[in-house]
Length: 604
Image (cartoon, rainbow, N blue to C red; front, side, top):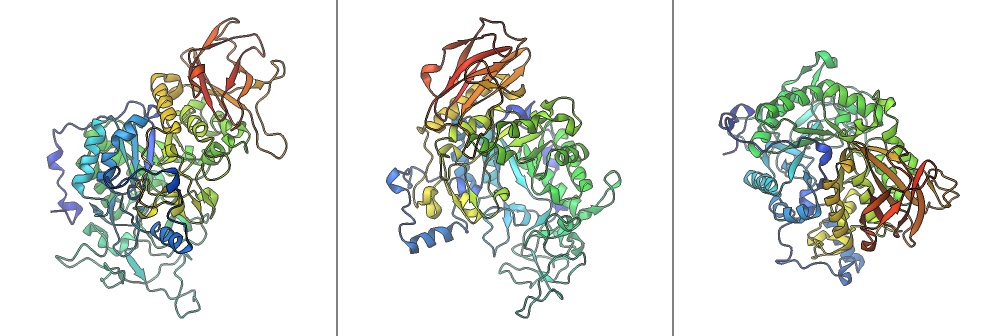
């Protein structure tokens, strides 16, 4: 029977158990982020056939069918933990070494929060996703495949677990809008399973159903919540700290400055819950949602408590990845002050990654994010090596406003898919692949759902299909990315080396950094070096999707002598692999490289 209170959780049974060890260096890992509901239902190739070209658009061939397909995308569609477990071999063969799993705990009953961010019971797994045993089986099987599991968790808020009784800001229809103004609102009651505020806003009666309200029981205390209404201005402090995320209810974490922070009972309760899940399931890390909206003192309390607990059971490098919006300075300060290990997607990394490859951003804009380390008070830019998770597509794309679109949506995106994955996986940071990128998913639209296609098909399948899956391992991008990630595993420089964008030249005489000229996209070789332990690995991509490009590329002057030869270790044109180029005394030292259309090469 599942516990109803944190006080009832049994930590005694974990003593003496052998837990899966942490990786020594998280920059060696390759993350893969997925939404459980949208990844796999385990029926692929059993009852669901693979998508063929003729199946694309089969769900939207009439306006009525298109409306049904779009509506399905806003609801649970059937992906589950067992399906994910079934696909671990697919991920292992791709080269994934750590899977970041969307939140799996029990959601409010009356909303279709398929994404997992509307938690109602922190002590149970949502039945749409499976059971506690399914979660434990997933982690155990992942470890057997050499894959670690990072679980997405929420501290900042709960789901829509209570209803307000607002008394200000008329809506014009006789009601009131409970938006933040710094003052608390009255609460009508905890929401029952049907969504009505029918449960007293107080401790539950003995034996009360766990289908309504919020659990564990310790969270029933009304002081758990700030009760100040929804955020209206997302950059206004303290509004973005103490306001609600839309209908999600903000948790009161405590008070005081960082060095003298007094954690609330609610924060202590949630911390203990997540400590329990570490030991119960043997997971390897957390991705902490909405860190920007939490007090720094609360984040530090949680990070310290989690790290110490994990170390006490043998997980010496249990990783905490924080969703820290803003620039490098904010990320650096948050990490240094709180003890969170890495920041996710800071400082326009996704934008500059995507549009560098598409030719709409100068490469220096992306590479300078990692070079100007003095801005974060660090002597070397390798600070970013294990402190930043890099990704170009994700599940909400806040940066794009209401026009959501995966990288492969329209234009040359599909042609350049391998190039952007290569850039993401061979530059500084911990790379993260958004599910389906390896299959060229191309979702786009005015709602998050359109970039959250169900890879397994169902009613909201990829490429606007129904009833077809896309778990193919014979596609060009899947195969090439698998080869490239194998190379990354074998070359420490690609995981840990210093990084330099390299000047290039078309004639071997005049060198400069590649950049856009005029109003059109840049079509050019973009080359960079990773230097590690007196060795250099040179990487280059081609932003031209139709033609091969040749350029002289500057390399380290002191590590090479004229006449030395560098060997091609990877190219998406197999004929290039094993061939070599000669170091010549141009711009110090340089080599002449040819990169296939929309391609990628690595020389050593």
